[in-house]
Image (tube, rainbow, N blue to C red; front, side, top):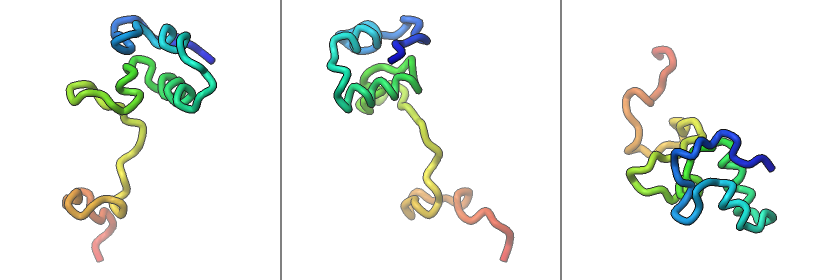
Amino acid sequence: MRLCANCDGSMRFSKRYRNFGDWLSTQDRHTGYIKRIARLHSFYPRASLDQLRGHAKAEARRLSRGTPKPVSARSWNALSPESSWQGSEL
């Protein structure tokens, strides 16, 4: 398992741990939770533990991995004229 090769140390990983390597060295690496956090850390090496867990405060930047929901999966209230049918005129 690769440890934080891209971390520059400018941001703390969590309140108790300075970086991902410090946090990982105190954890049991065989749990699903630890594997999920390590996998997410490989996608977002500068993210904090709260961001990786999905519990970041409102002022912290949220992580985004996906594409927007397709129009058919959105709620009626979330639709706008720009997100509606983009095909040719009928």
